Each structure stands twice: as C-alpha cells, then as structure tokens.
Image 1 (cartoon, one colour):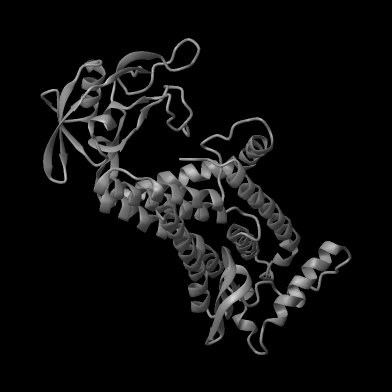
Image 2 (cartoon, rainbow, N blue to C red; image 1 turned 90 degrees about the vertical axis):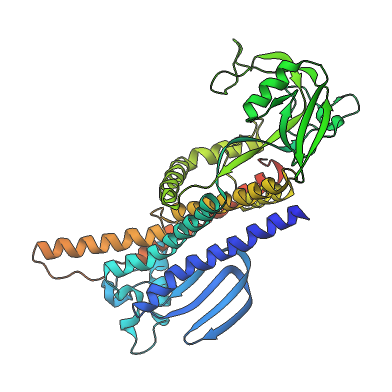
Length: 440
C-alpha cells in the first residue's frame, strides 16, 4: 500500500507540473492577445474537456506531457514570400503554414502568435520552463526550510537487520537460514529507537556509537534506548564480523586491488536515520542553481548516456546507479521511498524530504530539457524568436526595411525528427526501467 501511495504522489505531482508548465505558456499568451484554442494535459484520446470562453480545457489519456494551442504559430505563405514547395520537406513546411493559417479567424490576424514581438514571444515560450523552475524552488524550500537538510547520521535507528550478511553481499541479498542472526534484532532493538547509552557511556553521536560497537567485540553490554518517550534497558551481544575500514573522512580504505579493506570488529546490524536540520530559505536559490547546473551537465552528455544505457540493457554491462531513468524509473523510486519502513517519525520526515527533492529534480529536469534549442521543444521556439529578433535589429542598424517574420515552418521536419528520436529514447527508458531497473 505504501508503495502505491508513493507512486500516486509521483503521478499527481507530475500531472500538476505538466499543467502548471502549460499555464506558464497560456497566461502570457492570452495577456498579449493571442487566441489560445486548446489547453490540454496529456496526449492521445480526450478523457474530459470543457470549453470556457474561447479555450477548450481538457485531460487526455496519456499523462506524458501536455500542450496549449496558440493560434497562428507559423506565419502564412504570403507573410514569408510564398516560398515554392518543390521537395517533400518544402511541402511539409507549406502544409504547416496553411494549417496554422486556417486556425486564424477572419479579422483576427492581429491575434496570431507570429505577430508578437520578439520579447513577447520569449516571455510566452519561456513561461513554461520557468514555471517548472518555480515549482522546483517551492518544493525544495518546503523540503529544506520546512523539514531540513541532511546533516549526517543520528543516534535514532532507521533499520534493524535480521541477519549478518557478508560485507560483499549484493544490495538485494536477503537473509537465509544459513546466515547468523543479527544481534541487534535478537536483543530487541527496534526501528525508531534512539540510543541513549552504550555500555554505560552516554551516546552523543552516531560516529561515537559506531566506535563503541566496533570495539566491543563479542562481549555482552547494556544498552539504554529511548522508545515512545520512555527509556528501555536492553542487553546486546555483538558478533565479530569483517567490516570495512574507514579513514578520518569516513571514506572506505581501499587495498592494492582497489577493493575495500576489512577488519574483524563488533557488529550489531543496525542502521541510523539521517539527521535533518532546517536551513534558511535564503539558501534555497543556491541549491536550485547547483541542481540546475548538475542537470545541465547530464543533458550535455545525454547521447553518451543513451549509448551506455543501450549497452547495459542489451549487453553484458551492469547498469550504473547514475544511469538516466525515465518516467517508469522515477515512479519506481517514488514507490520505493514510500515502501521503506523504519525510523519512526524521523523516518517519515526523511520520506517526505526524499519525495520533495526527487520531484523538485524532476521539475529542474523539465526546465533544462525544454530549453534544448530544437523544435518541438520550447527551446526551439526560443531560438527561432531570437533569430528573428536578431535579423530585425541588424536591419534596423543598417537602415534597411524591417524584415518579415521568420519562416519557422521550415523547422517542422526537424521537429518531426526530434519527436521520433525522443519517442525512441522514451521507449528505451521504459524497457530498461522495467527489465533492468536502477534501485535506490
């Protein structure tokens, strides 16, 4: 049930992000007088719609995007000099111009999008991505200023393991009858317990507790935990197990073969929760800028990452945890966050923070990805508007007549090619996220 709640949260926020992205386009377009004939969330068959004023608002069956139809996106043939359509590419552009012109009502040519000035076009086309950036800011502000940023491990237990697994066991390895029972669970430790004292020593930090446990060996020692507001006395007997050696910075020490060095130490089988400390909302813009730049770096290397994804999905290579993921993978992450059980009230806060940060990063990704200067993405329309504005400024400086609108319909074949390419990558991501998923 908790897994489904996580997935539901993801779907609702995704749809809200798409809807608000399109609002970011629609509101300035209407403000500038452009007729908006359709506002739709999703693609494919229409599930529900209602016409209000001159705009039809609706919800479609496939929640993988949305659109607003701005009347007169492409200038008509006569506005761009009636270019000949000798090739199939030219015919595609001509058909796009004619279809756009048919949407313009008699006497409303002044309300066509192509009539807008360059600054107004930029405001309309950047409105959607900027809306995603605003959503990311709000979500991160709630997460970091409302709940807190992770500051390290606390002395509250998030998980109590049932057995002692080998140090090199896979992440998805489960306990078997052959595994040694974990002493923490055997002693009665529970997720949500806060360790107050260990072997008579007051515990103030997780690092201190870890050192005490590792130094205990296999001796029985008293432990005091706080549970539901009361102190509970327990006795634990750690087992001696091989565990990684860490340096002063908390990083594992590697041997000559590149593998972590281990040593026999006391082991309980418990995992701490992450301590959260609220930060000033004034620090959120810096976090948003950092996350945005990280996303830009990912998008800049997207072709190489797609190649790696193909090799790991259809070859013998293992899919890396930093691999790109699609909508199925993000939904899986949301479900796994919801399904994770442990940590009590603190664990619930960490769940909420994890959801908020993941959904904020989704909106940052939508912001960055939509600014790629290729049609049909918003960045393609931005690039066209900038080119048109540059031509007009150059003509003004040279004392030449003001040029007409750019024939943006000539980019329609490029838009089709990009659409097909993005669709192929999307299907690849769906396949990989189902049959070769990244887990958290």
